Length: 188
Image (cartoon, one colour):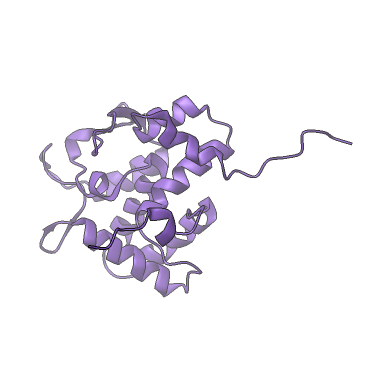
């Protein structure tokens, strides 16, 4: 039986999106179909909170506190749960999606046939990228990587990033520091 190669073999090093590219994908998603706002909101939350696709599609209304502007992130893969703040743009986007009345256990992101699946989100993201002739083949995990790299580039402490992404092991977080372009150490 053949041995599967490592992920690095299948995916190029540094495979992540810039914030500008995420914005382009959001605009493309918003411009496509009757669920454009929902799709753009999904991209926004996946990027800002470093959500895995299963965490995103598994999001429930009870995890969102509109008054405190917080999101209770329940991590998969034995990750550490966290409470994260929601920016005003995220609150506004989510309020536009919130049904009245709503159940706390109800999924946030639903489609014609019920809760969205990870495959449905991946397909939507791929179609949004194709719609704008995106230069790379976009997949959902790129949004999580984009979050990690963005936070490193902003100078956020690696331990804070570890908590934000829900990594149990700091080594999973340190990988985001290896590809960040460094300025020169001397100014001569």
